[in-house]
Length: 126
Image 1 (spheres, rainbow, N blue to C red):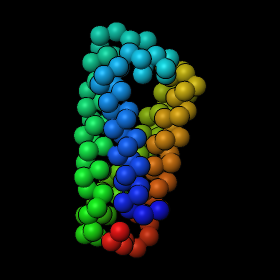
Image 2: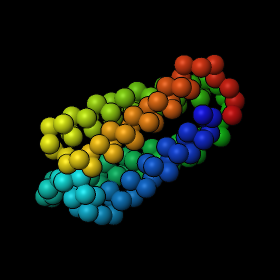
Image 3: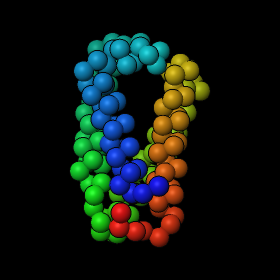
């Protein structure tokens, strides 16, 4: 997969989830089977803000052609997505999230695979 394509996918996913977590956190959390109180709602909105920042960053940097900049973006995204897989697995297996939690595991895993494929091949300007 090309650098630009993967970052575009990452940006869209992050922006969609981020906007949803900011605007309708109780709805998103209820889909995952998570009960909401004021603390969960505000933390979900902060999570949404972080996802929006990530989405904007990946959208705006997707056309960069400098190989060292690409490698820095790819490595940081790979590490973050691996951690995301672990956290999503823990949340789903522990019952904090219902079976919809597996979608989070899948999203983080697929993005990690994409970034791993870029990390372990020779960088190219795309």
